[in-house]
Image (cartoon, rainbow, N blue to C red; front, top):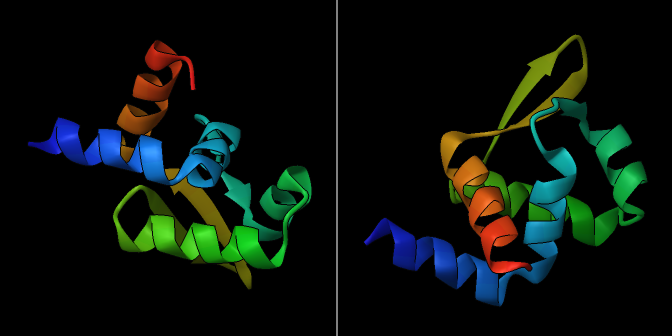
Length: 85
């Protein structure tokens, strides 16, 4: 059942997959991540959506919000690499 949900994310949310691939195994502050993506407004909305559906974990440390992939997010990235998305 979870595989179907992950595949649905791969098909419908191509921009989110790009965001998740950019995160990879690293932990980025939000500003650095959005600079790397080159998308501020839309990128931030995608980041919040990814957090809401459980693909990204966001933690606050000294006025900076750090973003890191959850296990579900890592599964999406792994599946995207297998498929070639």
